[in-house]
Image (tube, rainbow over all chains, first blue to last red; front, side, top):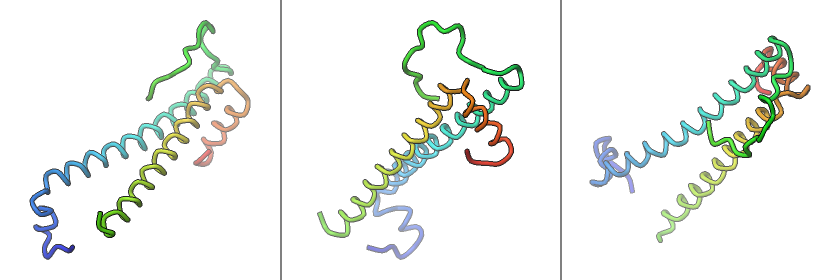
Length: 73
Length: 55
């Protein structure tokens, strides 16, 4: 199984559209997951620093029911 | 399935599992940081992170 030209590689025996769209979708999912977590981490640490500068202990707002789940982002 | 198909498939499956595990672990870290943001160790971590990378 080898391709003799770049054109053949891109065409993937006629299945090129499916193959490359699938790879693209997977790449987008991976990239999104990596980037979103890094961004959240950076923002979380920055919030801690800001709160410390502002006057210590950012704490949570007025207690009440802390909903168990924070869905994504 | 021909051998030259199932071995790459197995490797890919393993890769996806590893990616899932790593992603879950990363999200868990951030969740803990967010929930524990009022504590001393998180404050120290954030301050230390400002100086050098990678907590």
